[in-house]
Length: 266
Image 1: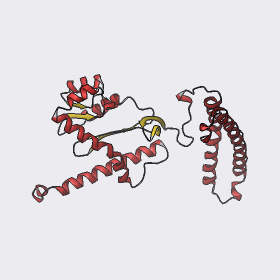
Image 2: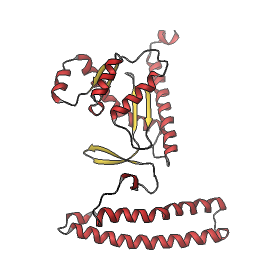
Image 3: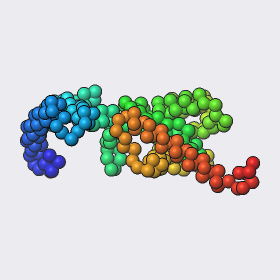
Image 4: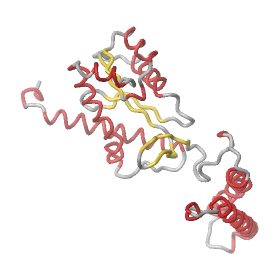
């Protein structure tokens, strides 16, 4: 189907491939159903324990349950050329909690997963984070929620400045920062306003510091020693939590080790 896109009759070729796939999927579904029934009726003669057989049957049932909806979704999109409502889309048969994330990157316009928002201070310590199970709210709203969570903490040093990329920049956010007496270093969307703000030394310094946050996600992954690919949202959430805790402990230890002996003794 991918290679047919370059052909002159691309639409007809894609539809033909999909029809073949639909017939094949129905055949595979029947095979899976028969194997599932045989396993349920006679698992004692296999090498699987009852618990293992139950788990295999549950996984087959989950795939069979989604099969009609997956076929219908592909039919609507390719043959019917009709959009499928987001609430009805199956993005992953294994991970029902993944969402469509519009990135607009050169490597991919759209990705699939869960949005992770992190906030860190000037030393790189992660002060707040949120992994969204459903569709993440607008970035400005994410910032609002993060600020609310951090204001509920007993911070030894109040938040004095905030720096974000232009995706977070909204009029409401700028007003909120002004009300809280927090220096606004959010990157403006308008090019002329950005040029004016680049004349402010504090704004430039905070924007340079903000760029380091882009590398924080790979650093968090390194703390776990592998990609955050845990199955199920609950397990992914726990993996992120442990990774961030490990990252912060590692960073605090490094900062303490970099202090002069006199400061460590005090």
